[in-house]
Length: 161
Image 1: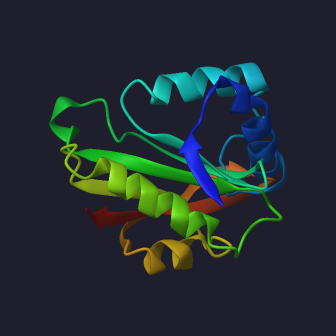
Image 2: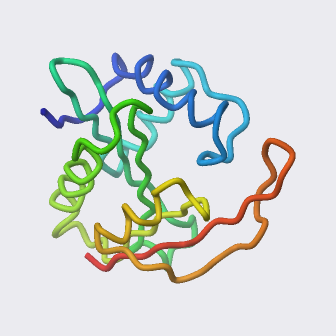
């Protein structure tokens, strides 16, 4: 298992991983998956100020995680939002933990004090994963998004780093 910074050559595989979540699940509230060009743009934008990491097993990207601004308001500059997606067939192998631990290691000393995760609830194990990583639920938005003909709630989860 190897973790490294994402780069533009990873955009196609990252888009492939994300496509499943955008098109087949309510885990992502996007309804149309971005193509590789758009994903490449997003990677570059995040990397202007935050880490965007990929995890590889035998040279194949199995997942990715990144941090971005929590809010555009200046007073939130000590907070960031964390996001993770793993290949749908690569869960339960420790990739998520490894990615989160590396992001937190890189953020130490950066001035970021709080990480927030916005997680679909109930969320196919996402809440439990974040709780194992030290996050706690600090808020809930009931019926916040509509996808596949039904309403979905999300929880805000927080970790002080």
